[in-house]
Image (cartoon, rainbow, N blue to C red):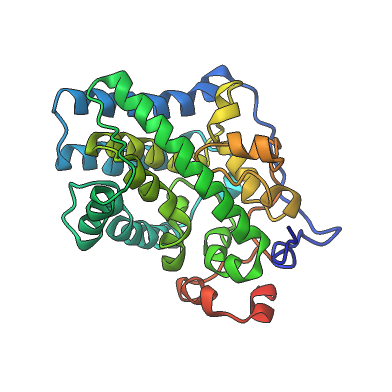
Length: 318
């Protein structure tokens, strides 16, 4: 497939200064952080669902209110790169995108939120022609069903995401997410509204076709929230062999956010990295020089919202 977006994600010019990157010492502890938190949160939520002890307020506290403040605090203590620490203004911008995502995306994941999106999601699920029903009640059953949904939805996500990088027309919806110059735990939701309605529909579609129960949806949500936060975090997380053959990790996703196209045009699986390994788009670099896209310059919220409507020439000039 021809990469029509290649002029946008240009690498810095030869001779351009790049920040000094202090090598991260290999640490088993930091290799275990992401698997323990991600898989642990899935099992915890599955257990709570299995004993009917999960309700809206509790799920919100565990999956939304708790992870981000903890990660922000952790980033100040265990910082991967000092030049990625966010200024107050940048944190306020991230809070805007986080609030926007909460109003638009969270309702697609859970029947706890009574909105037109939730009602539409339930209608699609009820009308599915496939007589499949994933409604386990045990902890292992819920975990296994959630993993099945993740495999299927991430396959859809992989190809949609890849097309966005290889087509200038679709890149304009995705460019907002890549026009960040620092990594941080709140940055994962910096996504254009049009992208929410296209790239990220893989999960609810998979859930609908599989007839997944609310409990399965909740376990999938636990994975997506924790994994998304950690993948964008400024923490010295390491990859864990075997785990990182299947699940996407922070170092892999940092490479995807690099200005250098060899890195950014890889690791499209933000949840499941297996598809990248199978389809030849995996990049195993553990460090990146510069985060961003194009000229790697920060953009205002207004510009980020207007990116989808820019001309091709204007997009290439960013």
